[in-house]
Length: 286
Image (cartoon, rainbow, N blue to C red; front, side):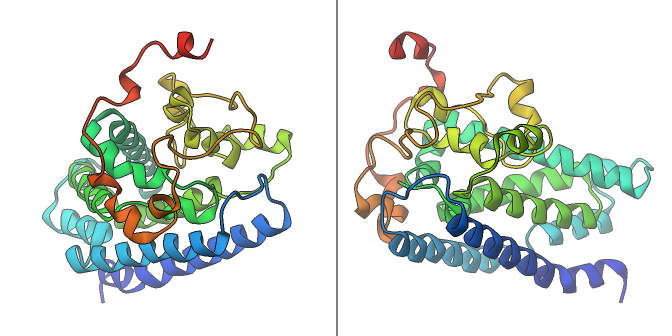
């Protein structure tokens, strides 16, 4: 068995182990030290949010059996992508690959807010009326498939080491659960962590109903892109306990808390310009 075959055979257990471990830690932490009081039934939200996660995982494996790791193996075997044309130490290739893939995830996140038809898909993630560890994996199936195609394209162009793709996937899943968790961090620790990773308080701002706050803090893993491109916002105006989570136009449980409604959200309402294109936020809130 060659190295790529070995990695492919162990990829799923490794990712599943990290997912279950981080999920359990965050879920327990939310019980012991919650940041906000939940507004809706946790049991209903968890059953439906996790139901969407399992549905997406089933469809993703059905449509793309080998997923991103398989594409990385294919790119390596075909000598496609930047790192298959230049020589670099493995540690450097892994580090650069993880950072570059994270940037494209950030850019994709900006685009699903900026393009009206893509925002329709992404509304499922933002329509959650509460904010906890399950929110981090709550995405419409079509958005998950689109995200995977974008990831494939980046991998084919970059040609990252297979291990870099696994590291990136594990980091992305782990940090998404961490920064969506309803957990309280001491302010000083939060400020220090923001230098290297997106924290729950940093990303929670992004889930505000306020347009300018929603269109900030797009990062899931690395916090640098928002600071670099001017989309960083330190805190919500109403404070973390006082801010309203979700989308103004979707406040009913049938859309926000139940799986059939979540799947229907992209097909509700008219396609129109989204607020990321507006420039009068300041005057609107004065």
